[in-house]
Image (tube, rainbow, N blue to C red; front, top):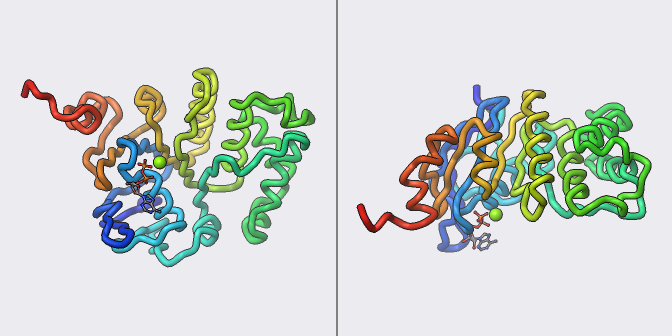
Amino acid sequence: MSLLSLSQVSFAIQEHQILKDISFDVEEGEIIGLIGPNGSGKTTLFNVISGFLKKSTGSIFYKGGEISKFSPSQRARLGMGRVFQNFGIFKEMTLEENVLVALEALPKAERQELGDLNKIVSATLEMADLADFAKKKAGSLSGGQMRLLEIARTLESGKELFLLDEPTAGVSPKMTHQVAGIISKLKEQKKTVLIIEHDLPFIAKICDRVIVLDVGEVVLEGKPGEVQKSKKLQEIYFGADPTT
Ligand SMILES: Nc1ncnc2c1ncn2[C@@H]1O[C@H](COP(=O)(O)OP(=O)(O)O)[C@@H](O)[C@H]1O
Ligand SMILES: [Mg+2]
């Protein structure tokens, strides 16, 4: 059984069809890259999967159960994690306190399933390579380190499926490398990741499979190497080759 399965999922606002008949399966432990030009519907698809937007038609299954009617927090309780950027890092608090505050902000039912929060705080800082700074104020971190802390904070919150929307946007090449490191750690833990990224070499390095969206439709799917070489991908990003 697939961990996540979308069957002919569509989403429309008024007359405007934003997602059209999206179908794909995600197996447990897979790292999947979701790519496509700006405005192709990637973020909307994440919103539909995590429940912040209600699909118009189609079905969404998580661990075999239909979840379309579930609220975002019910989906989170089932193990879906969405990384929100800019949830806020409190600069006057230490790194430990920042992670703890985010965990304490989770709905009670989710928090109780986590067990010892202090253990999770340590694991989170470890994950972001920031354990040495645990007692330091977050204000002393670089912008990139803060981003890593934000990402890691969601990743250690007991989830199974992670939806990461452009985690490397605006971070330095060194930080991009660290984000890749975090994703490999998730893979080692057999977690499942759907990641939206513009950086194709990054996607090729970390993903098992790539799904390409264009104008709200899945137009290509395959191993990173195959997708990267595909003529279709060139067409989507750069227009049809005039010589053919
Ligand atoms: N709340 C909304 N109301 C109207 N149009 C929207 C809304 N959200 C997204 N769109 C439109 O849906 C399309 C897909 O957007 P989005 O999912 O943000 O694309 P991507 O993340 O791939 O850049 C765009 O044309 C965008 O303008
Ligand atoms: Mg987007």
